[in-house]
Length: 139
Image 1 (cartoon, helix red, strand yellow):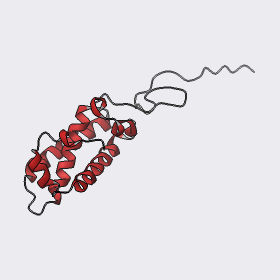
Image 2 (image 1 turned 180 degrees about the vertical axis):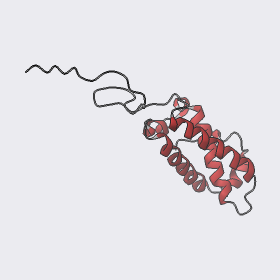
Image 3 (image 1 turned 90 degrees about the vertical axis):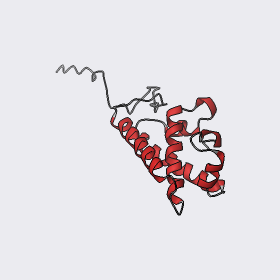
Image 4 (image 1 turned 135 degrees about the horizontal axis):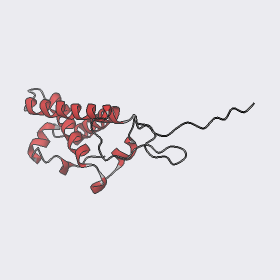
């Protein structure tokens, strides 16, 4: 998995156990949902397979933080009493706003981009430069 249990520094071990309802399968499912939700915003420009397959220090800290926030939001939403729902909802909304800024190009995180067939980096960058082929019409 992309996230580890130690990434949830905002929740104590006991709180995390309560949030995942004493079953790590619930947390892992919420993590997969969070990663896919984030990938939906990032996929058009960034290589999400590389982003979410990274481990340890190779992971982007901001992506890890927002993935934890979204995962915790889903876990809290599944609880009967929705304990701590306000702060989780606030953090979730902040994460989604950041993802929307990345998607619109207002924020440019240091993430791996797609590589083109000819080795060109960042092939889906909305800003293109260069010129077309020179056409000489000699008849």
